[in-house]
Length: 47
Image: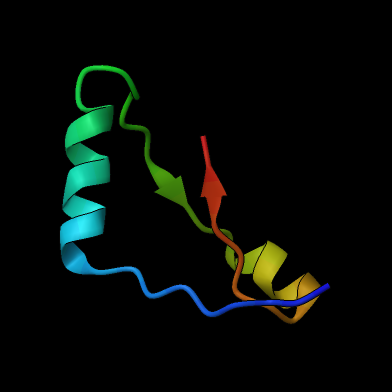
């Protein structure tokens, strides 16, 4: 399967944000030092 690079611009992100306004609910992004230490990675949890 061929893969093509996709360039995402700031304008693309702004347009997506505008499209989601009033539809998507803003929720916090949480981290866990313990989970990071156990996995050896920096994890982010979206609630």
